[in-house]
Length: 337
Image 1 (tube, rainbow, N blue to C red):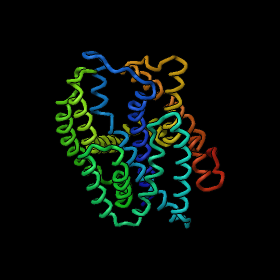
Image 2 (image 1 turned 45 degrees about the horizontal axis):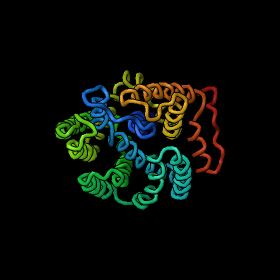
Image 3 (image 1 turned 135 degrees about the vertical axis):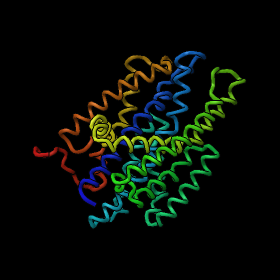
Image 4 (image 1 turned 180 degrees about the horizontal axis):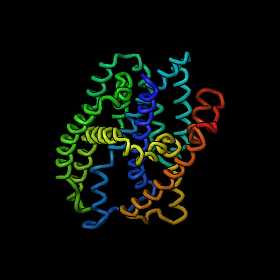
């Protein structure tokens, strides 16, 4: 694998992480600010349906899958450098557990704690045959999806991420854009069918007892088809990234994803800060929560781009790396880079 292929692979993962983060905040802001339930036949109601059709359970799925990919790449690279990848990974998820424990005090639905625990569960699968990981991961995900239990999807999604690493999916991506396009087309057809089915149960009246069961069905179907829609999103973004022009336009997204830990945690901080300063708790409408997210997007995208122009790691990424390797990594970029 030449240096260009390595850089393309890393860039693709960073783009995907950034993309996933932009969807995650749209959902996380709702409970954090206790956003009001929408009124029927309003823009809030329309946005609510959009959120649970195209966002909820889609971006968290991508983020979780990428954790599995990162898990495999981290251990493999450590081993290639002659280090004990297992020990380093255990130290890495211990630090993640600490981050998650602190973050959970402010964001009860946060994912870092779950990822650190599930990281222990998936550790033995690093040495398992790639076909076994793929088949077992898909099988588990299919069964769990039928029961619409999102939290139990974490382990099979991470296993699929490991399998993607074992199959060198992202290493081969640059030379397989036709395969990626076909995959994206298939996932589009399946996603469209699933979303049309889900939309039949979309709520148009809120707070009504007659609509409650229908709404619950709508949400459960959304969880069931979530991995399919997520796969379409991933395929679509990878296909778009095969065009240099698109890569340049979306380059801030790459920086956003490279600082995924910092941005994920700071999303919570910025949401709560805005809620406190502007007295938004229990006051914000659904569509207004979207506008606030856009403001946070812009702040974080600009910050990430400028920060990484001069420094190698995001603030929390630097701490994470330091505590993982028990050494202080250089933060500043050399003048020639």
